[in-house]
Amino acid sequence: MTYNIMLACMGGFSTSMLVKKMKESAEKIGIDVNINAVSETELDQYDDLDIIMLGPQIEYIYENLKKQYDIPIVVIDSLDYGTMNGEKVLKTALEILENGIS
Amino acid sequence: MINNKETLMSFRAKLQKVIGSIQSSYSVQAVSSGMMMLLPVMMVGSIVAVLNSLNIESYQAVLVATGLKSAFKVASVVTMNVISLYVVVAIAYKMAELHKKDGILAALMGLMAFLFITPMKTNGIAAIDLLYVGSRGMIVAMLVGLFATRFYIFLLNRKLTIKMPESVPDFVSKSFSSLIPAFIIALVFALINALVGLTEFDNVHNLIYSIIQVPLQGLGASLAAALLIVFLAEFLWFFGIHGSMATSAILYALFYPFDIANLEAFQAGQALPFIVTMTFINAQKGPRYLALSILLVRCKSQQMKSLGKIGFIPGCFGISEPYKFGLPMVLNPILFLPLIFAGTINVGLSYFATLIGIIPRVNGMPLPTAGTPEIIKGFMIGGWQMAIWHVVLLVVAMLVYFPFVHYMDKQKLSIEQAATEK
Image (cartoon, rainbow over all chains, first blue to last red; front, side, top):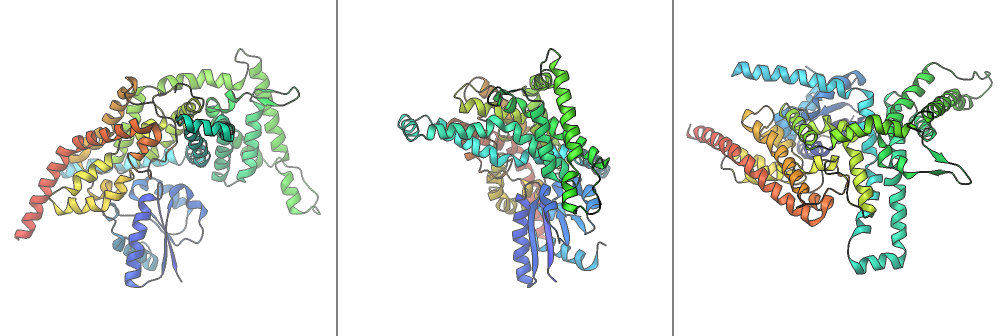
């Protein structure tokens, strides 16, 4: 099964940069995942997501979102976000998808 | 120092909670996401306004000769001059969606309610004075969009529906379920309209205009309000909260109507009424992250330099996240002052530059806060003078950031050198 990873921030701009890096890294390690970025306000238009990853700048919607979804929701580590460390963020996502939130 | 960090972190957690609970209000969400939906319509209106107003004689002659001039006029009437109709539809729709109810039906109810309280002449042809449905009606439209939808949902939840016999198909009875709420909404808003008609205000629009909009606009149009909003947004950013997102509902509710008013005047070739608008507040903070990019790529420390490379292109488009979280700027006391002051100084300077007439007032073109290339952004909101002004703001932002970035660079460089010597 292919995982559906969704990143969200305010306009979907900065997360889409990170998505590009994550895709590159997924290709490198040879796994098949769907990774997309979207504006936080459009999140509800998507079904079948496996994990939602929030940009640290909208961490304040985390609590509300957690009430609405029963899939893992995580706030991306701020330093990984700032340095656009796609490899590390992808690793975090896959770990949670496979082992659950520790 | 550790103690300090802990205080900061606990303050941050409290702030996150406060902003989170404000943002979880359906009214706040409906206003900001509903108004965001209007962007495409407003872009049509404003691009046409710009095309229409280019002051080149031969070009204007072509416009008149080809009939494009009157086509352009229609385009601005059906967008900006009736913007309040779009506002009520979008906000009612979003509000209903948030309550998990049918958005389109709620939007129709909202529009109906809005039209009930809007003065109309009905002799022969039905005519609405554009005064009420343009920028001046936006606050009424927001209020009606929120209130009528809440009322509609309340009625739906009371199950005031006509009971159909078992044999009636489901989809038929569903279409009847909104019937009684629709009649009640119509009755209530017609009643409100009639009652306010008896007062000196004559209609709901005048009432809300005098008791809410005029005082708010007096407050909103001031430099102090602009500086306060910019300060608040940057202050929130220091704690890692997306400041312009958190303040967007205030901006849309109070300052966006000024943009539309400017755009209406711009289209009509009149003097623009407002200096401080939403676009002014968003755009005149200046190309801060382009400034930071230029400073960073010239840094000696490898860490700062490589971050400058990651953030340069996004910085050109006003996207700051690599710097906010990578440098970082969030919870970094060294960069607190420039983070707060670069934007506020630029907005203050821009206000006075507008006041003495060096730069024009912003034409009201709605721009997303991020994603438009810097400098070009200046051109779009105020022509070539504004583009040059944004170069000035770029230099100002570089001057504000320079000493702090320089200090950080020296610090990081010595750490890096110490690491290599080992």
